[in-house]
Length: 275
Length: 309
Image 1: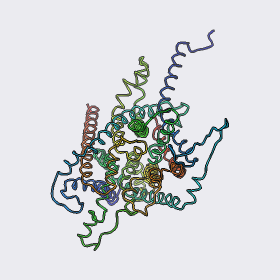
Image 2: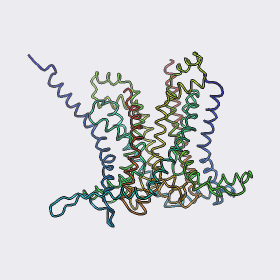
Image 3: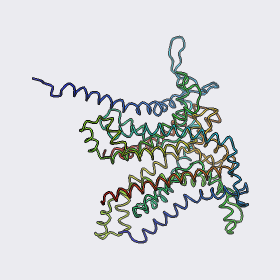
């Protein structure tokens, strides 16, 4: 079917591509244990930069701020994105559907500087007209993050919604379930894995955002990416290497758990089908 | 005789159902209208004002003086963008950089996605997670990693010096090359993902039929696999190209003084010069440039989101 050379070329590219993706991250991890401040000099193993990281009050408070914003944004985006995915995949003839689907796909590719600037102008204008928001900070960042994260949740959830067997929902409704109850009893358990992955995706996106948050934040609401950015602008900093290592480690552990759960479910489904 | 075949209670239930549907639809619609679409109208409005030293730093468009409403529109910002070669060069630089990076992503990403789609089933999930994992860690930190590698005293230069291939450090950091490398690195997963989802759905019987009919595998690839994965390629290219045009972090950290990209220029106009009208005009022109790619992407994505269901 496909000759041996064709296979080996794409396989080689896959291995090289993965190396390309992982080598820089690997370098960060190794150099976070470097005793020297310089990148090119290896001065022996040390965990000095980790203790320096945990003593840095500015970074710690920024981490806490970012985690709070990411938690609230991901939760709201999960609700809003799921609702979006639901009405787009189910209400085919609703007026305004085309506009809604345009507004939910555009944030996926919209350059961040445009989104950030536009939301800032909105908040300034709103404050002028209604007095709210009086000052920009956590709430404005939360609104901005919810808006663009909803788009990602909607994509993840709509893919899952398309696979739902509609006949089970119809059966539930024939048996007297209200649409609301049908959704919570039949549809929701089926799309729950997509909600979890959508929430996780939104959480990481919100945690990572620098540009939009910089536009819509005010004094006193500094998120982690802002602190990291102002520090790395000055050059390489071993403390940031330590922070990077912790982030990479956390994401890897979560990804591994996700993979394990998915594999177990897959196996269970297969053995269920066989018996 | 009853002319209406639908009994009244049922009719009432249908009406409440339709009302509930409208409410369900209305919530996300109102949110996105307020926080996504309306802000674009505001950018357009502010781009037509002139900058003043005030809070907020622009003049109002609608003015009420002596009971007459006057509308003051100022196209000066757009003329200013055209007249200053810096802005034109920045737009051109962004498009060029984004284009080269997109092609690089495609050339690396397509074979990767191809190998993943042909891998055994139980490997596919692992490989997919491995490709996506970097994009779930911090974007900023992944770009920052290259600062340590490409710098004059960075890892790559030290390595090349040690090998004896070069006598003095190559200038790699703060060049356009570094920006292209950074964008390719940061956006590669977004190229691989849609191509993989597309290739994995490819009907393998088509390839078998082609080979049964005597097609050589390379011909099969050009005649069947590649055309059928067109939608995935298009989506991947848009996912890389459009955000890359407006990229700020990568040119700021990896680029040098001669790196002109519009996202960086917009940022500087806004934060350093506090010229909101010019920043808005820059955003509007960037949107106009990206309108066609965004529409292409939207058409692909809305097809994906409502295939059956």
